Every structure is written in C-alpha cells, then in structure tokens.
Image (cartoon, rainbow, N blue to C red):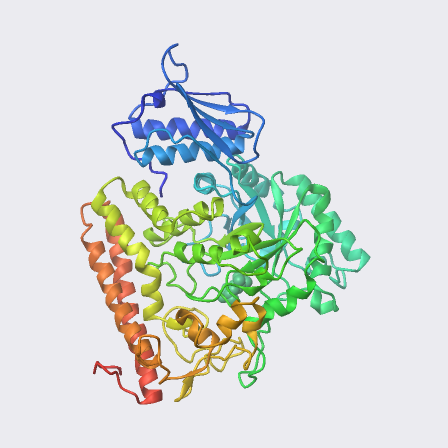
Length: 639
Ligand code: GCV
C-alpha cells in the first residue's frame, strides 16, 4: 500500500534526528512511524540524540486540539498536538509530504468530523458480505482474531486520517451475535488495543433483537423495562471489558432485520433506548436509515423505494438523543454508479447524521473494474441541499462520515491494486471534504509507485476518467439496477424487473425510467426548492440523472440533439472503447511498476474489458430487440 516509503536522496537535514517524549502509546507509535519511515526514505535510521547545533524533528504533546496537529519550523521541525492521536496523524502527514518530495509543510490541520470510519461487512465465519479482496482479517472460523495485519490496518487508517472502524457486518449473524456475551472479550480487547495505539476506535454491529437471541427474553420491544435493563447490562459489560470501544452500529427494520417497527415503535424509540444504554460509557449509536419495503410487488407503481428513507426518518427529526447519529447512504437507493444525493440529508435539522459511502464496489465493478470513486464522493459532499441559505452543502450538514470497507486478506489488501486509491482518498476526504480528487490521485500514485512522472500521469489518467467510463458501459443516465440479481456483477437488464426489491426501470418498447416528478411518485418533492423544481422537470433535470427522475420515450431529444436511445447506444460503445484504452494505457507501464503489480492489474483489465463488452452488447441488443430502433451509425447491436 502507500506506506511502502520509497528512498529519497534529497531528504532534508532535520530528518536525521527524531526527538520526542514517548508519553503515551500513541506518541510512541508516532515516533516509531517517523523513525521507520525516515529510515526507509533516507537509508539509515534517524538518531534520537542530535548534536547541539544539528537540526532535528521534534514531536511535542502540548495542550490543544484533540486530533489536529500543527507543523512548525523554528530551526528544528516541530509536530505539535494536544494528544498522542494528533501526533500520529501529524507524523503520517509529514511522512506523506516528504515522500512526495516536499521539504517541511508548515500548517495547522484538523479533521472536519470527529467520526471518520470504515464499516466492515465481515462475518464471524471469515467471509465478507460484498467482499472482493479475500476473507476477513478480523474473524476466522467463528472467532475474532488479532494479527500483525490488524496493526498494519490500524497504521493504514491512521496514515490517511481515519479514526474508527466497525469490524463486523451490519447483518449480524452466526457467532457475531455472540460478541456481546463476554465469550470473545479477550480477542476483542486485543483488537481494540491494537487499533487504539494508532488512534482508531472500535465499533461493533449489534442485533436489535439480541435481548431475545442472547437474553432469552420474549420481546425486543425498546420500551419494555426488561429489554432496557438487558441492554444496559450488556453495554456495561462490553464497555468495561473492551477499552476503546466507541459504540454500536445498528441495521434495524431493514432487509429482514429485526427492529422497533415489529413492536409498533419508531426508530427514535429504538435508537434512544440503545443510546441510553451506552451513555454511561460515553458510547454512541450509529443507526442506519437504509429502511425500505423489500417485499414489493412489481405491479405496484405507487410505492417508490427511493422515497422510503425520507418518508420514514424526516418526521422523526429532533427526536433522537445527542449520542445517536443517523447513518445515511449517499443516494436514496443503494450505491449505484449514479444516484442523486439523499434528500434525507437536507431534512434533519436537529438530528446528528453520518454520510455512508461504499468503497467495496458492489455495483461499480467489484474491485475487478477500476472505478475511482473519489470524484463522486466529492460531488456528494459538495452538493447543496438548499435547506438553509448558506453552509448548506452535504459536507456542512453532517456530523460524521463512514464508508463500507474494500479490504480483505488478499496480498494487496484491496483485490485490485488501483482500488487502494479509493481507500486512501476516502480517508483524505473524510479529514478534509474540500480535498481535490485529482490531487489525491496524484498523491496516492506517487506514494504507491514512486516519483516517475510517466507512471503518475498514466495512473491518474486511468483513475480520473474511470467512473464515467464505468457508468457509460453499464447503466448511464441514472437508470441503475440492470445487474445480475444477487451477485450484482455483470448485465441482466430485466434481472430485478419483476422481483421484490423495488428496483425497477419499467422499460417497455416505448418508454424507459420511473417518473419521480410531481406527476409521478413525487420523490423529487423531497428536495428543497429550487432542487425539487429542477429535478421535477425533464427539461431542467441534469442529464446524467434523467432516467432516475423521469420516464421518457426513446425518441426524447437530449440537449445535443441525439435521441435518448441513441445516447444510450453511444454511451455503451464509448464506455467500452474507453475501458479498452485504459487497459492499453496500463500496458505501457510494464517495467515501470513492480512486476507482480503490473501483472495483477493487467489481469484485472482483461476482465474489465471482457465485462465492458458484455455490458455493451447485452444492454444494446436488449434495447434494440425491445424497440426495433437500429443504431443511427449502423453498428451491430445484437448478440
Ligand atoms: C450488508 C445492499 C447489499 C447488502 C447490504 C445492504 C446494506 O442491499 O446488497 O449486502 O447488507 O445493502 O447496506 O445493509
């Protein structure tokens, strides 16, 4: 990963000595990272005792910020922070700047959000739900495990500014249900301490019906006194036994998971009951809003899954405890390649919210296709929700941020070597949502592959165009959901069309798309003005989301004069050609990046190109058969 620091001939003189008081475990970790990092870059380990006049690098813990740090130059270089945690972040930041060839960046830096975390969908048996990079390194054969990789993982997170992780799947199954029983306290404590050294807090997903599953109670009703007492006791036990536990993450009333609706209670009732149980320990509750009807009848055209989260949670604004944070996916449906920003983010004036992204590329190529997601994340963070006159961007409306992790026990951590840029980029954006995705790509490439300009340019070229390329050859214009049901990989245009999941495009031989304007399901009206009007009309709707919001005839004229259908055909041809060009660009790097990386990525590109052609041909021929309208440019459309 990017922590493989490369030798640098012109390392500044101050880097020869590193001085610091190892006040805490974290300060010690910061010192160790600096020493090993500088040794790798400079070729020899820095000394700890500089001669009197020699410049040095000094780490100082002095009262101040909790996680932020200051870099100062007064002859010597200073990294200052109020805590060891800040020193860890500062040490990694300086190492990154040095690895980029810089000298000493004097700066003040502090994170935008107090919670910046990764969610793992790791199961206790070691498998990972939607995992595309091997098995879990947190669980093996039913038990949590702490290994050398746990420590490296903590280093990775801290090195890009992240400070938390939830180690188990929100779908809490099997032995993961038993994490609260005390049976695994030893292992959990070990993991927690290992993460803590690098300032990374531990979170656990818990099951809402744990009082029944574990406690043998007849109910999990959040207002039942016995249920409350059970949770208070369970929280007390786990918080006492596992230091550095930050709180619980809960998926309730979602995709078959138990939740407060079973008892006629609201999500506020459920979340607040848990919030009260963890409050004595300073704990927090992250409560997911991914709630919708997953037993829909495709003939029902009234129910619109996109509406569900706002309909459920907006009326509850202001009813949640201050240690509850509502966790909201970036779009209203489910991590598609293009979705509008969730309107719920603009409907919570008096409730803490956390924006959830997905690094695991469930619908965006599953870490077999290169799809650099950071420009999309930045777009979401920049999106103005218009719920107040200023400071109304998503980034300014949330209190925390998380992403579903793309890591596993594969040798390269992320399956596709280039997918590591997503993990790195998410960390940087979580620290500073104004970070530039192009600059992040450059930084990641230089840290990972060194300062070879040809490599940096090629890698950045590939990364920066990859999202649009993927979108074009799969599901352009916000259509979404034409993937194979279950696996979510590869094309199946009608795979979800007559299913129960509420994910329909409703294509006929005449029209395609779901009408979500005022004359349709009214989803567009969940946005504040002027967004509601903009999305509500096909004329003003941004074209990239046209078929998310509107049902239109194939002959509909796009702004450039092409018909809607022709635009879809063209996008598939173009996207596929772009994927082929990316693969060719990668091939020019043979001999310039490590051989094994070159070969691994070349293999991934082979699969990406194969799959892109399949997407192009399956979608285009399906539309051709449906409409009998040929490509205006006479290309072959049918398989
Ligand atoms: C963890 C999607 C995925 C599920 C996932 C769910 C969620 O539906 O396909 O695998 O479950 O989202 O975010 O809870």
